[in-house]
Amino acid sequence: MVSAPEVASDPVRERLLKAALDSFLSDEYHKVTTRLIAEKAEANISMIRYYFGNKEGLYEEMIRHTMAPLLDVLDGQMLQSVNGFEDFLLLYYQTMSKQPEFPKLILKVLALNQGPGRRFIQQLLERGRTNGVRKIDSLKSSGQANASLDPDIVRMAFVSLAMMPMLLKDIFEEQMGRTMDAEFLEQLAEFNGRIFSAGLALTRAE
Image (cartoon, rainbow, N blue to C red; front, top):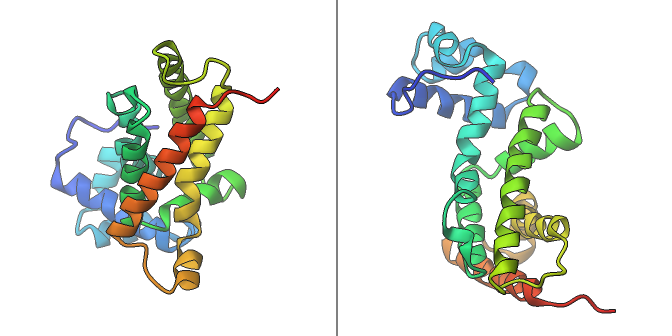
């Protein structure tokens, strides 16, 4: 990925990222042009080259920028205890509810190989996997998680609890006849967080 200059708070850069997110979520990658993004952002097209190098660089930075709050948590203190998983799930639900098409975009790239960025997204997920393993090992060492747990199974279970409600959000809301609003997501995060925390303490049946 092209490294952008140190101007994270630059309003033009932020507008370009937002315009890119809106554009790539609403249309296929090959149909979105840098000129269209620049027009939406009310910016000169040359600024895309300045900040991101090209269309693919902008696409990758848009993904990184959207996922950053979630990935940064893995480097912080939130998951130092099992209770933090509830907070992380809520953060994920809140982040994705602001752009509900984003999880579907990630799925299309990874499962259907649509659009660029597959290797880039896999690198981000591998970062999450590596940090997640460290967190699980820390919880094991402190006695908060069973020592026999397979960290890959733990990760897969957690990703399922996080992603599925957002991937199937439209279907769930239609079936329930109500929206998954802030209160609903808080209750869901609390419930799934408790399920996950209880699972960490379980011993494997022999």
